[in-house]
Image 1 (cartoon, rainbow, N blue to C red):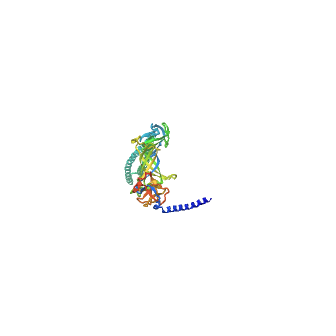
Image 2: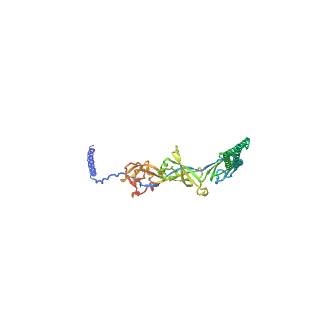
Image 3: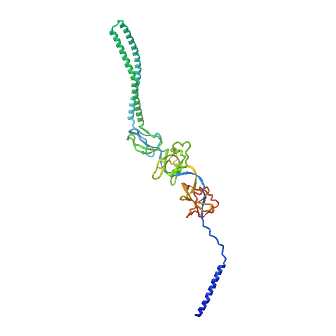
Length: 451
């Protein structure tokens, strides 16, 4: 027991000496120089922000329809005596092709009657002219006779005063004068009535001529011809069928001019209109779609093919679709069927679903890649290599880029990297291949992605 106590007294001094040695070692050890911890920074890709000329363009869709949609409506009734053998759905017919002929017999009879009436009235008018000449001649003769009777009366009055003739003989001469005056009066009345009678006959002649022209017109309408080159879309008539006026017998669509009603959103329309300059000299004229300077192109695209046609903007719809908030812009395409190369470029056909691209004027915009746009903010690297969040307004988007406006300056460094989180003022560092000046433009960076 005493031996164990003696060993315990030796243990404690040894521990104390070891602790003192450890403290001295720590105190006397040399320390490395103290370095401050650097602020962490984000590696980013940047491009130089600059304005660039851009042709504003909007895309839309629509269906092809013929500009001319014609209905075969007979203007006269009767039995069909001829029907063109190619009057069938899908057939293409040339201009002035005789489509139908209606039995003309009834209309030929009416025309003959009208012609006979006209000739009869023309004969009556010629007779009136001869009658007028005869009346004038008779009036001249009767005037001469009146002068003779009047002279005889004066002579007999003188003889009566001399009692050389009886009173009865004088009275008879006076009666002869009165009778001659009556003849002159009748002839004068006939002459006065002659113009009225002639006018009546001329009016009747005009009516007869009108009936003849109407009969001729109806006879002409028994043959129905196609007024343009077209494709048959519908047929509702057969040979020997009795048809009535205004009955729809067929529908034929024009093939030379096709239209597309492209539905364009109101926002895109406003963007296009901002690039349009009103032509000089038209400030006081009504606006015309053709004078806006817009160009267009329509495209038919499938899995294995793509065909395009230049188009002309002819008019803009008068109403806005309340459901889609779109406006119809009508595009027109002219095509010559006789010059088409079917294997290389197909014709536009009614009902085709196509895309339309409408281009406005050229303007300078801040164009940025869409991947650099974060809501309505852009990430900008300032001169101190720190992040600055800049508010912008998106004007339009096209081909992977967005046109924006805001408090932007030429040469700003636009950050393309998506930072999570993005804190205003955070430290940034540029990739090694961009550190020489970040001279990539926004146009060059539109299609580039970070590795």
